[in-house]
Length: 259
Image 1 (tube, helix red, strand yellow):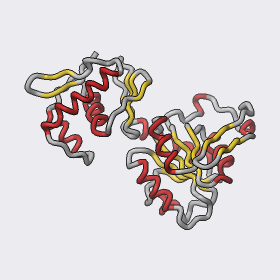
Image 2 (tube, helix red, strand yellow):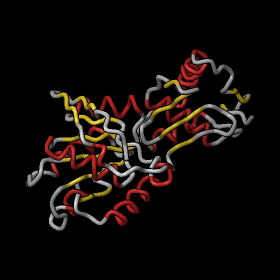
Image 3 (cartoon, one colour):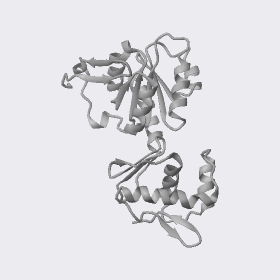
């Protein structure tokens, strides 16, 4: 059994102290979905306890619980969450509106899981069409739900890049990079340039390669802008104790060295 310590949850307008988690079953490492790292966005305070109990039973422990879009956005970026679990108000005919709002907030790359109290039959299709990746019910069959969450966690994990022999961690869904556990202050375009090089180690990437990669993500730059962006990226890495990580290849471009 888990010790009955208070579970303190900060919301945008409330402070909840949730007791009674001692009734939750103990979870060993193999029963925990470690790759699924969500922030719980709870728009239904009455469902907080039941929702937490259900998530714990499935092997999910939210990184943080919030009750508004603004703290959700801050928490996702600060904690490098790879998903949001949304608890919309029960019985609302407009539940897809919060889904659309959350999907617009977190972008297309993070996972979005909807947790409902009622039956899913009439709502699941609309919620999935609104941008959800998976919809779960509190009275759903746990083994099947866990299998679906595990599949989503595997898809989310594919976005993680960790170069061999380096203490560098990149999460392309959250667009977050960490070096020796410290977050790197990267804009979206700088993150994608770093990730592009790390995914193609020892390969000389030309300015046109970077321009085409960014254009595919909806970011348009001039090929001549690559050198200034690389300069900024080098300065950030140097300021975080990682100089000389990006090499210039004469008359060709730039590369991330191996070893």
